[in-house]
Length: 289
Ligand code: GLY
Image 1 (cartoon, protein in one colour):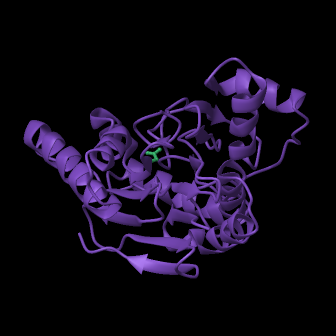
Image 2: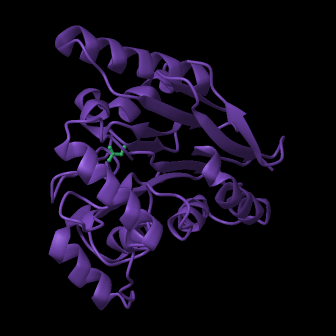
Image 3: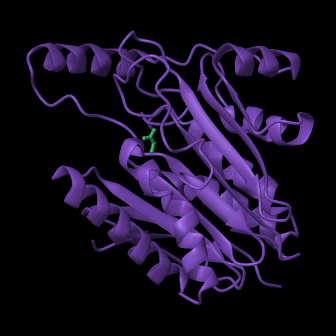
């Protein structure tokens, strides 16, 4: 029985372990992706996803999330959603309960309420302090960049179905209404059962310019191993942006194919991911840029 799951950053380890348990018992890739994201969304110590995420410039936490089914390429995504702890679950409902792919802002929130999700206060005391300090830094012209460490997940289940998903509070102190790569298909995530899936973390403004995840999946279609596909896609996006603008943000990708192989790549030091498969228990991997 072949299965696998991979997710960005070591903070995803608990979620990856839970997803691995589901997949081992024959659970669906889509459900495993949702489960993995929920763990991180609920964790207040992760300041870039869900509850405890960093607010926008006006002090509001706006969340983006998406989920994609590699069986029929169906998508559910939400962007700039306020007051709900688990945007991945709302995104999943967009996929299953609507004829649309993406809902944003108030429309997404009204849809969430209709689907029975409960409103929650997402701001923690600790994050409020960080936000005030970062706002002071911004006023003083100091570096105030924070955030955009998305949880992105890809899963392969024992019926050879694949799914991918993302969840993030985006970049801290972002403009109200700013949307990153995470809810945008092909940019922050992509998956196709016939090949594999990819998902991204990092500066959304750069990642989306090269449709980085779609490109990585197409590289796997050409025969590249997931690790090579991640490396080539990150390098290409990095190079294209740098040669045009002279600067480029941090970015990283994780990829998995439909045979149980996986890998990751980053254009910066310190990127980690968690993964598990029919061949290996849940573990954290560090990527060399
Ligand atoms: N990658 C997350 C973001 O930029 O919003």
